[in-house]
Image (tube, rainbow, N blue to C red; front, side, top):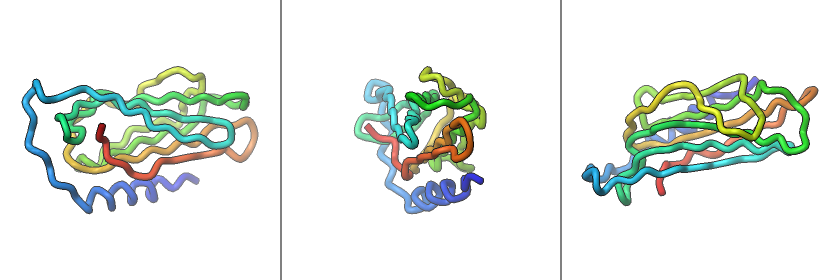
Length: 147
């Protein structure tokens, strides 16, 4: 069983620590940023692609999209990977996930559209679908979205 609550607690605890918000930047002082964190386990690599708006020298204030890509290398498996993204900068916490993640090396969109966010950290977890028992998993510690 996957401990999503543990991941949620880590993101919530980090978000609760708080950070000071930078003043809002004008449209000309904002940029679109692509963040691509990844982790690997058991010959699989999972990557997220988060496209967001960021005031210059600030943190993400709007998420445009969250996508994932799974490369299974020489491993054999189906398309039932678990992909979980969590953003503690919203109230309630924004969660995007699938339990039928496709492992074909191409980008796929997680459910849900764009959203505004405040200050807080994000987390991600992959449970790869390996042929047979013992699906490998990996996750990244909560992290802030910044350039």
